[in-house]
Image 1 (cartoon, helix red, strand yellow):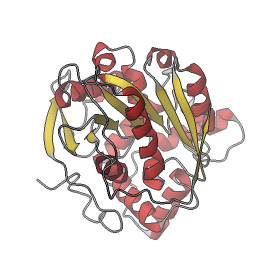
Image 2: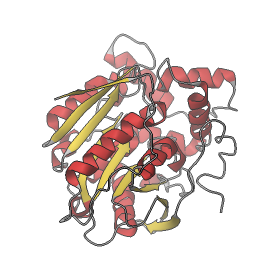
Image 3: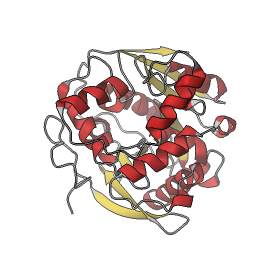
Image 4: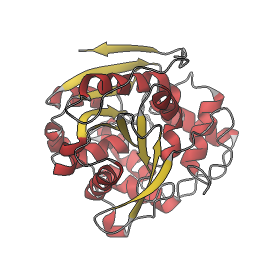
Length: 333
Protein backbone atom coordinates (compact mmCIF):
# COMPACT_ATOMS: atom_id res chain seq x y z
CA UNK A 1 0.00 0.00 0.00
CA UNK A 2 1.24 3.49 -0.73
CA UNK A 3 2.03 5.21 2.52
CA UNK A 4 -0.39 7.76 3.88
CA UNK A 5 -2.61 9.19 1.14
CA UNK A 6 -1.90 7.74 -2.28
CA UNK A 7 -3.21 10.82 -4.09
CA UNK A 8 -0.56 13.05 -2.54
CA UNK A 9 2.16 12.15 -5.04
CA UNK A 10 3.88 15.58 -4.88
CA UNK A 11 3.78 16.36 -1.21
CA UNK A 12 7.26 15.01 -0.62
CA UNK A 13 8.67 18.18 -2.09
CA UNK A 14 10.19 19.91 0.93
CA UNK A 15 8.15 18.00 3.55
CA UNK A 16 8.80 14.23 3.67
CA UNK A 17 6.01 11.94 4.79
CA UNK A 18 6.71 9.57 7.72
CA UNK A 19 6.27 5.83 7.26
CA UNK A 20 3.77 4.17 9.62
CA UNK A 21 4.79 1.26 11.81
CA UNK A 22 1.47 -0.41 11.04
CA UNK A 23 -1.94 0.26 9.57
CA UNK A 24 -5.32 -0.83 10.86
CA UNK A 25 -9.05 -0.32 10.34
CA UNK A 26 -11.26 0.80 13.19
CA UNK A 27 -14.88 -0.26 12.69
CA UNK A 28 -17.21 2.60 13.59
CA UNK A 29 -20.73 2.30 14.99
CA UNK A 30 -22.32 2.05 11.54
CA UNK A 31 -19.82 -0.49 10.25
CA UNK A 32 -17.62 1.89 8.25
CA UNK A 33 -13.91 1.14 8.49
CA UNK A 34 -11.84 4.13 9.58
CA UNK A 35 -8.35 4.07 8.09
CA UNK A 36 -5.80 4.44 10.89
CA UNK A 37 -2.00 4.52 10.97
CA UNK A 38 0.40 4.09 13.88
CA UNK A 39 3.85 5.69 13.93
CA UNK A 40 6.76 5.04 16.30
CA UNK A 41 7.64 2.30 18.74
CA UNK A 42 4.69 0.27 20.02
CA UNK A 43 6.03 0.50 23.58
CA UNK A 44 6.14 4.32 23.62
CA UNK A 45 3.37 6.39 25.25
CA UNK A 46 0.58 7.26 22.84
CA UNK A 47 -0.69 10.47 21.31
CA UNK A 48 -3.84 10.27 19.15
CA UNK A 49 -4.41 12.93 16.48
CA UNK A 50 -7.59 13.90 14.60
CA UNK A 51 -7.19 16.12 11.52
CA UNK A 52 -9.49 18.86 10.31
CA UNK A 53 -11.84 19.62 7.44
CA UNK A 54 -10.44 18.78 3.95
CA UNK A 55 -7.25 17.28 5.39
CA UNK A 56 -5.98 13.74 6.08
CA UNK A 57 -3.38 11.82 8.09
CA UNK A 58 -0.73 13.43 5.90
CA UNK A 59 -1.52 16.83 7.39
CA UNK A 60 0.06 15.72 10.67
CA UNK A 61 3.32 14.60 9.02
CA UNK A 62 5.54 17.40 10.40
CA UNK A 63 4.15 16.94 13.93
CA UNK A 64 4.40 13.14 13.72
CA UNK A 65 8.10 13.39 12.92
CA UNK A 66 8.68 15.64 15.94
CA UNK A 67 6.76 13.34 18.30
CA UNK A 68 8.23 10.02 17.20
CA UNK A 69 11.75 11.47 17.38
CA UNK A 70 11.00 12.42 20.99
CA UNK A 71 9.90 8.90 21.96
CA UNK A 72 6.14 8.97 21.46
CA UNK A 73 3.84 6.66 19.55
CA UNK A 74 1.38 8.50 17.32
CA UNK A 75 -2.01 7.22 16.19
CA UNK A 76 -3.62 9.21 13.37
CA UNK A 77 -6.67 8.46 11.26
CA UNK A 78 -8.54 9.72 8.21
CA UNK A 79 -11.89 11.33 9.02
CA UNK A 80 -14.99 10.26 7.04
CA UNK A 81 -14.49 10.79 3.32
CA UNK A 82 -10.93 12.04 3.77
CA UNK A 83 -7.80 10.17 2.78
CA UNK A 84 -8.52 6.43 2.71
CA UNK A 85 -11.68 6.39 4.83
CA UNK A 86 -14.94 5.95 2.87
CA UNK A 87 -17.37 8.83 2.67
CA UNK A 88 -20.43 8.86 4.88
CA UNK A 89 -24.00 8.35 3.71
CA UNK A 90 -25.83 11.71 3.56
CA UNK A 91 -27.54 11.21 6.92
CA UNK A 92 -24.26 10.26 8.60
CA UNK A 93 -22.59 13.64 8.17
CA UNK A 94 -22.97 14.83 11.75
CA UNK A 95 -20.98 15.60 14.92
CA UNK A 96 -22.20 12.27 16.33
CA UNK A 97 -20.51 10.42 13.46
CA UNK A 98 -17.24 12.25 14.13
CA UNK A 99 -17.51 11.14 17.76
CA UNK A 100 -18.34 7.54 16.79
CA UNK A 101 -15.28 7.35 14.56
CA UNK A 102 -12.91 8.77 17.19
CA UNK A 103 -14.20 6.34 19.81
CA UNK A 104 -13.73 3.45 17.38
CA UNK A 105 -10.13 4.48 16.73
CA UNK A 106 -9.37 4.76 20.45
CA UNK A 107 -10.83 1.33 21.13
CA UNK A 108 -8.94 -0.28 18.25
CA UNK A 109 -5.53 1.38 18.39
CA UNK A 110 -5.10 1.52 22.18
CA UNK A 111 -4.92 -1.36 24.63
CA UNK A 112 -7.67 -1.83 27.19
CA UNK A 113 -7.20 0.80 29.88
CA UNK A 114 -4.37 2.54 28.02
CA UNK A 115 -4.36 6.31 28.33
CA UNK A 116 -3.22 8.76 25.68
CA UNK A 117 -3.07 12.44 24.90
CA UNK A 118 -5.82 13.10 22.35
CA UNK A 119 -5.38 16.09 20.06
CA UNK A 120 -7.53 17.60 17.36
CA UNK A 121 -7.00 20.35 14.80
CA UNK A 122 -9.96 22.41 13.53
CA UNK A 123 -12.74 19.87 12.79
CA UNK A 124 -10.59 17.38 14.70
CA UNK A 125 -10.90 19.55 17.80
CA UNK A 126 -14.64 19.70 17.21
CA UNK A 127 -14.56 15.90 17.06
CA UNK A 128 -13.16 15.83 20.60
CA UNK A 129 -15.91 18.16 21.76
CA UNK A 130 -18.57 16.06 20.02
CA UNK A 131 -17.28 12.97 21.85
CA UNK A 132 -17.09 14.72 25.23
CA UNK A 133 -18.72 12.68 27.96
CA UNK A 134 -18.57 9.39 26.09
CA UNK A 135 -17.15 6.55 28.19
CA UNK A 136 -14.73 5.48 25.44
CA UNK A 137 -13.14 8.92 25.39
CA UNK A 138 -13.01 9.30 29.15
CA UNK A 139 -11.41 5.87 29.56
CA UNK A 140 -8.58 6.63 27.14
CA UNK A 141 -7.98 10.40 27.26
CA UNK A 142 -5.45 11.57 29.83
CA UNK A 143 -5.35 15.07 28.32
CA UNK A 144 -6.51 17.01 25.27
CA UNK A 145 -5.12 19.41 22.71
CA UNK A 146 -7.61 21.74 21.00
CA UNK A 147 -5.75 23.40 18.12
CA UNK A 148 -7.16 26.09 15.83
CA UNK A 149 -10.74 25.22 16.61
CA UNK A 150 -14.02 26.51 18.02
CA UNK A 151 -17.25 25.24 19.47
CA UNK A 152 -19.85 27.55 17.90
CA UNK A 153 -20.47 30.71 15.87
CA UNK A 154 -17.94 29.55 13.29
CA UNK A 155 -19.46 31.47 10.40
CA UNK A 156 -20.08 34.80 12.09
CA UNK A 157 -16.63 34.92 13.69
CA UNK A 158 -14.63 33.83 10.63
CA UNK A 159 -12.59 36.54 8.92
CA UNK A 160 -11.79 34.96 5.56
CA UNK A 161 -14.36 37.16 3.81
CA UNK A 162 -14.00 40.68 5.27
CA UNK A 163 -17.63 41.65 5.80
CA UNK A 164 -18.17 44.00 8.73
CA UNK A 165 -21.29 42.60 10.36
CA UNK A 166 -21.64 39.10 11.88
CA UNK A 167 -24.75 38.43 9.81
CA UNK A 168 -23.09 39.29 6.52
CA UNK A 169 -20.02 37.24 7.41
CA UNK A 170 -22.19 34.27 8.35
CA UNK A 171 -24.10 34.35 5.07
CA UNK A 172 -20.97 34.71 2.96
CA UNK A 173 -19.00 32.01 4.74
CA UNK A 174 -21.97 29.64 4.59
CA UNK A 175 -21.84 29.80 0.79
CA UNK A 176 -18.12 28.99 0.82
CA UNK A 177 -18.34 26.09 3.28
CA UNK A 178 -21.26 24.45 1.51
CA UNK A 179 -19.92 24.87 -2.00
CA UNK A 180 -19.22 21.74 -4.03
CA UNK A 181 -17.39 23.67 -6.74
CA UNK A 182 -14.05 22.04 -7.60
CA UNK A 183 -10.98 23.79 -6.31
CA UNK A 184 -9.14 23.11 -9.55
CA UNK A 185 -5.49 22.15 -9.92
CA UNK A 186 -2.85 23.30 -7.48
CA UNK A 187 -1.45 26.44 -9.09
CA UNK A 188 0.22 29.68 -8.01
CA UNK A 189 -3.21 31.34 -7.92
CA UNK A 190 -4.94 28.65 -5.85
CA UNK A 191 -1.97 28.47 -3.48
CA UNK A 192 -2.11 32.23 -2.99
CA UNK A 193 -5.82 32.01 -2.15
CA UNK A 194 -5.29 29.10 0.23
CA UNK A 195 -2.43 30.87 1.98
CA UNK A 196 -4.55 33.97 2.53
CA UNK A 197 -7.48 31.97 3.90
CA UNK A 198 -5.67 29.44 6.06
CA UNK A 199 -2.04 30.36 6.76
CA UNK A 200 0.09 33.15 8.14
CA UNK A 201 1.85 35.62 5.89
CA UNK A 202 5.24 34.16 6.80
CA UNK A 203 4.43 30.59 5.76
CA UNK A 204 7.15 29.03 3.62
CA UNK A 205 6.35 28.12 -0.01
CA UNK A 206 6.92 24.42 0.75
CA UNK A 207 4.39 24.59 3.59
CA UNK A 208 1.82 26.27 1.36
CA UNK A 209 2.36 23.73 -1.42
CA UNK A 210 2.13 20.83 1.04
CA UNK A 211 -1.14 22.12 2.50
CA UNK A 212 -2.65 22.91 -0.89
CA UNK A 213 -2.04 19.40 -2.19
CA UNK A 214 -3.72 17.88 0.86
CA UNK A 215 -6.74 20.21 0.73
CA UNK A 216 -7.19 19.81 -3.03
CA UNK A 217 -7.20 16.02 -2.68
CA UNK A 218 -10.40 16.13 -0.61
CA UNK A 219 -13.41 15.12 -2.75
CA UNK A 220 -15.68 18.07 -3.48
CA UNK A 221 -18.80 16.31 -2.23
CA UNK A 222 -17.13 15.43 1.06
CA UNK A 223 -15.83 18.97 1.46
CA UNK A 224 -19.31 20.41 0.91
CA UNK A 225 -21.08 17.90 3.15
CA UNK A 226 -18.82 18.49 6.13
CA UNK A 227 -18.82 22.22 5.40
CA UNK A 228 -22.60 22.27 5.86
CA UNK A 229 -22.20 20.47 9.18
CA UNK A 230 -19.67 23.06 10.35
CA UNK A 231 -21.97 25.87 9.23
CA UNK A 232 -24.58 24.83 11.79
CA UNK A 233 -22.26 23.49 14.48
CA UNK A 234 -22.95 24.34 18.12
CA UNK A 235 -20.94 22.29 20.61
CA UNK A 236 -20.82 24.95 23.30
CA UNK A 237 -22.70 22.78 25.76
CA UNK A 238 -20.21 19.93 25.27
CA UNK A 239 -17.03 21.80 26.21
CA UNK A 240 -17.66 21.42 29.94
CA UNK A 241 -17.69 17.63 29.57
CA UNK A 242 -14.01 17.60 28.53
CA UNK A 243 -12.95 17.11 32.12
CA UNK A 244 -9.35 15.99 31.55
CA UNK A 245 -6.68 18.73 31.31
CA UNK A 246 -6.90 20.48 27.95
CA UNK A 247 -4.48 22.85 26.23
CA UNK A 248 -5.68 25.33 23.60
CA UNK A 249 -3.49 26.49 20.69
CA UNK A 250 -4.31 29.38 18.36
CA UNK A 251 -2.45 31.40 15.73
CA UNK A 252 -2.79 35.17 15.81
CA UNK A 253 -3.49 35.25 12.04
CA UNK A 254 -6.12 32.48 12.07
CA UNK A 255 -8.97 33.74 9.89
CA UNK A 256 -11.06 30.55 10.00
CA UNK A 257 -11.24 30.15 13.78
CA UNK A 258 -9.99 33.46 15.23
CA UNK A 259 -8.70 33.96 18.75
CA UNK A 260 -12.16 34.65 20.16
CA UNK A 261 -12.87 30.92 19.94
CA UNK A 262 -9.67 29.96 21.76
CA UNK A 263 -10.36 32.41 24.56
CA UNK A 264 -13.90 31.12 24.93
CA UNK A 265 -12.68 27.52 25.09
CA UNK A 266 -10.04 28.38 27.68
CA UNK A 267 -12.70 30.01 29.85
CA UNK A 268 -15.19 27.14 29.55
CA UNK A 269 -12.88 24.12 29.90
CA UNK A 270 -13.07 22.60 33.40
CA UNK A 271 -9.27 22.16 33.51
CA UNK A 272 -7.52 24.41 30.99
CA UNK A 273 -3.86 23.41 30.76
CA UNK A 274 -2.85 26.63 29.00
CA UNK A 275 -3.80 28.95 26.18
CA UNK A 276 -0.90 28.99 23.71
CA UNK A 277 -0.91 31.90 21.30
CA UNK A 278 1.40 31.48 18.29
CA UNK A 279 2.36 34.85 16.85
CA UNK A 280 2.10 35.19 13.09
CA UNK A 281 0.56 31.79 12.47
CA UNK A 282 -2.68 31.08 10.65
CA UNK A 283 -5.16 28.23 10.87
CA UNK A 284 -2.70 25.51 9.80
CA UNK A 285 -0.43 25.72 12.85
CA UNK A 286 0.63 22.03 12.78
CA UNK A 287 2.17 22.61 9.35
CA UNK A 288 3.34 26.18 9.91
CA UNK A 289 5.07 25.52 13.26
CA UNK A 290 5.11 21.77 13.97
CA UNK A 291 7.75 22.18 16.68
CA UNK A 292 5.49 24.49 18.67
CA UNK A 293 2.42 22.24 18.37
CA UNK A 294 4.46 19.13 19.15
CA UNK A 295 5.94 20.88 22.18
CA UNK A 296 2.47 21.43 23.63
CA UNK A 297 1.58 17.78 23.00
CA UNK A 298 4.81 16.58 24.60
CA UNK A 299 4.18 18.79 27.61
CA UNK A 300 0.72 17.29 28.04
CA UNK A 301 2.18 13.79 27.78
CA UNK A 302 4.90 14.49 30.34
CA UNK A 303 2.42 16.01 32.77
CA UNK A 304 -0.54 13.67 32.40
CA UNK A 305 0.56 10.26 31.17
CA UNK A 306 1.56 8.35 34.30
CA UNK A 307 2.46 4.82 35.22
CA UNK A 308 -1.00 4.37 36.72
CA UNK A 309 -2.56 5.45 33.41
CA UNK A 310 -0.65 2.77 31.53
CA UNK A 311 1.99 4.92 29.81
CA UNK A 312 5.24 6.45 31.02
CA UNK A 313 6.75 9.25 28.90
CA UNK A 314 10.33 8.72 27.84
CA UNK A 315 13.00 11.42 27.54
CA UNK A 316 13.71 12.79 24.12
CA UNK A 317 16.03 10.62 22.08
CA UNK A 318 19.53 11.84 21.49
CA UNK A 319 20.01 13.62 18.25
CA UNK A 320 16.52 15.09 18.10
CA UNK A 321 16.64 18.79 17.41
CA UNK A 322 14.24 21.65 17.87
CA UNK A 323 14.31 23.95 14.88
CA UNK A 324 13.54 27.64 15.03
CA UNK A 325 10.37 28.57 13.17
CA UNK A 326 10.42 32.32 13.20
CA UNK A 327 7.22 32.35 15.25
CA UNK A 328 6.88 33.25 18.87
CA UNK A 329 5.02 31.09 21.34
CA UNK A 330 3.64 32.40 24.59
CA UNK A 331 1.33 30.90 27.16
CA UNK A 332 -1.48 32.91 28.71
CA UNK A 333 -2.61 31.47 31.99
